[in-house]
Image (tube, rainbow, N blue to C red; front, side, top):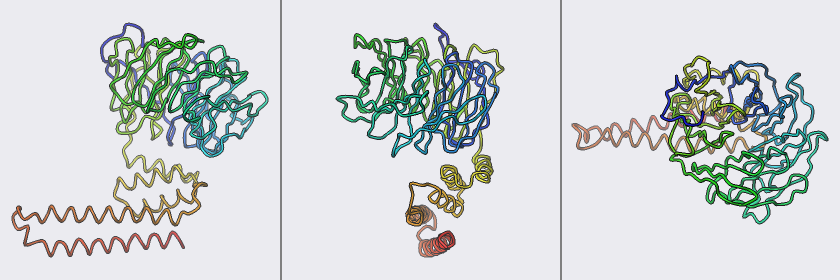
Length: 440
């Protein structure tokens, strides 16, 4: 989106190009320093590589765990992955081989990852009490923990290196902290985002840093002067966000809606509700050195946006719930212990009213999840919740059908109540038999 662009663009003008292939949630995105290569990582345990100028897939490789976050090395030859298994891994793009696996995060997977321009360091953040972790990529080991000093909580949510690789920005739930990479010393504590998560942080140059919180509050600050250069509250929630290289535009991902905003005027440039329908936007990213940005959602849909691109516009990928069930079922044939896939499939069967298959896949998810050591107890809790909900729904339907103000309503009360309660007993018996079968 170039400077001076005004007015809201349509999808055709904004050149939305779908990048197909992922089945699981995509919240891991990265790019080479020159912006020529895009990497996307998914909960389907794959990383895909794309040509940013055409949207063409140029490579992919399988990993051993759900991919929670990633970053590319500046030259685009390596991908650093934060796995949901709590490992940080370095993979070679050309061969698709893992070069090193590093352990450091203990209880929560990575929420943010960045790679320094000099190629020596990676930094990761997660929702655990360790601040940010600094990794030595050449030695293949954890270098140190960097815990924000004087923070109300040392939990880091987002991390970013400065272009000269000398500083690391750490955004947490209470502040924005700038540390020296080599010494780990605090350089500056900038104004944070009180009461909100700092979901995104980025250096626009070596001394200017931008951040976005979950309420759509964007701040641009000078590090050395500890001064606010720009602050704008956008009229939207921001589950994910990104700022362009020139600091003039911001892309926001919400629930089913992606938008781009002009920071100078606070006006919407693009707002699109069909490209991701009713799905949560898990990640957005500006491709370095370009006007292109990326949006990714819970179902694995990835869209590339560029109003200046000669690429022909494509209709957004809008999967139905039935199509979503099919692709998850197919994926689970090849990865039967995929906990997240079973969980999502259970939710899709719930949408279809198929409670029996919903139970089967919730139970499979609990069995496959290494953090769940009581799948039987979990299944019982789900059963109790669903049974209670169905009882409530049936009683509510009876109330509406037997409204005394409706013709014949009072006459039907005893008969309808008896039928509804009998159906409730049959339903409970059906569900309990499924549970007994699963537990045997």
